[in-house]
Image: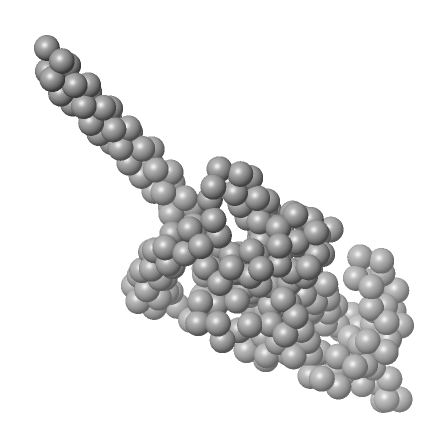
Length: 261
């Protein structure tokens, strides 16, 4: 049975309204190397079901993850099949998705974030410098610790907004932005250890043709494990410190009683 194909006009109609593309958009994407089409004997473009799926993926990465077309092109060129591209795209969407993901949220400039939270741009810049909030790079990623990925226009996602809101409440208790620096540095070290284990021990064991699909599984498991271990450790350390604090207070009270006896 011959493979079903669609004209460029049919593609636009089939994808609308869930994937809003135009004929000129598809021609431009083809010129960039993002998609390709076959030609009829008369020279007209025709597309397959795989092409339609590729177009959906590209549009989703562009509109939901704010990924520039140049980066999407590299992503498309790095995989061999539409199944692998779908797996890699799904991983990128989930991996870079903020914890407080809101599909209607538009990343905020520092000035907009200042208005939303009541914090000064200087305070937000300090929070950014400590690593408590990180600029949105326009492709789903956050700025890295080496500062080599600083975006031309600083914007913050949903998590950045929430961190700023939390700091605003903590500031009422005397917490300062600079207080986050050590915590963020130690967290970076801990997460780097986690990544090193992932890269050195787990990832090499996955067959190359399965890596795109399995990397999301490993990422989800690793993050869930980290959250549980952190929660358990948080409770255990809290109990120990409160017990030690109680002993210190008891010793102080006993010492005071001894002095007065």
